Picture 1 (tube, one colour):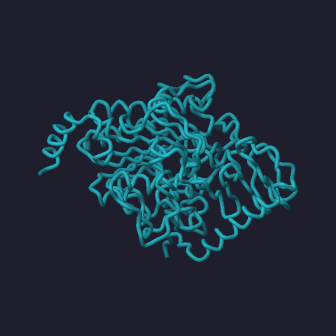
Picture 2 (tube, helix red, strand yellow; picture 1 turned 135 degrees about the vertical axis):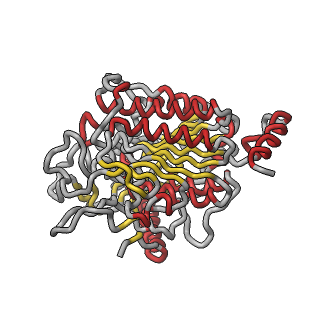
Picture 3 (cartoon, rainbow, N blue to C red; picture 1 turned 90 degrees about the vertical axis):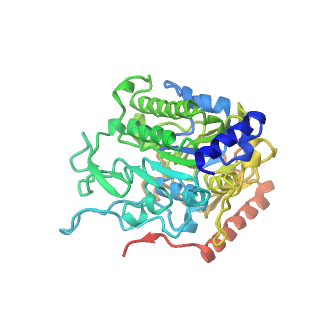
Length: 469
């Protein structure tokens, strides 16, 4: 039976049993990721002076997560973890990948590291179940051909392979990253354009997404839409310029929200929204040092680069009419590393069995079949952990992005000679450490051991980053 005939046959039975389709057929999956969007940067999370009606609609018609964590507070590490279901330290991706700078007479070019091609991504798992796959936007898991999306399970790729500040752009400081290669636009593995007009990026990525949805409406498909914005430098299309009271940052977020609305309407126009799961989130918290060109993480502490809540805890809304009961806010811990096993299960697949995966299937919790999240523990790093309401930072040096700490340890760094213990249920802003209270001494020891055991397990089973000889 060909795919179109099969879809028609399935449609006949769906008409007879309208409550069954979401559970009985693998869903299309759309994963939309913003860059450096803060926890408080959606209307449904408390944003002010700009509006996000389409994302607020997703929350009203679906699920809003209030304790959703990216596994890193910088982009390459967070994206690698999200797509593989593994903590960054396990797969050797703990920082940010850069293209190679011009040096000693040698020209600038692709970087020498990326996500190891031996790792298994969400796209590769879904392809095994017949999914069409595409990535449109920022990749940032290596720009050498061996690391590109087309080598990691994606049928199509269009976009900038790293951050939009890693090269030239109109109006940049003359001495800023002048030794980087021109910012490329890739189609599959070929550079088709350099130094693009970044005011058009959101629209161009959205156009590709809509075209892909139309071409694969018979499904199933996996569409990964990782935007370059609102990472600095900020650029916005003419239609949205000056549209937000907040300024340029608000303009950009409103254009991102418009893009989400276009995707939702495309799914509805093709009559496939009821068999499509849409997930929206951010790769890490806001780059607070950018001032008015950054978002906000209120009421969380700090932002990007840090181990505090504002660096890792990000907005996440999910919508799947018929399968996800709407207008629910869930407070349980869910992490980006849980996406791989969750999406695999929905597609009738399984995570790879030949390697350690840190994520867990959270669909019973998201769908309302389970009262509590199966995840009670999350590691921000091998030295920082949350278990239920309690968060521990073991002694050591930590970066604090904003406000600048009063510390002589290192610029932008603070050194803790003692652990820091916070109850996130009563102190979401991590203002008062309870580590010195006698009644919490045993808890500090327990969480400290949890980190130590995790480090030992990582050391025994960590895998290498991808490298070009």
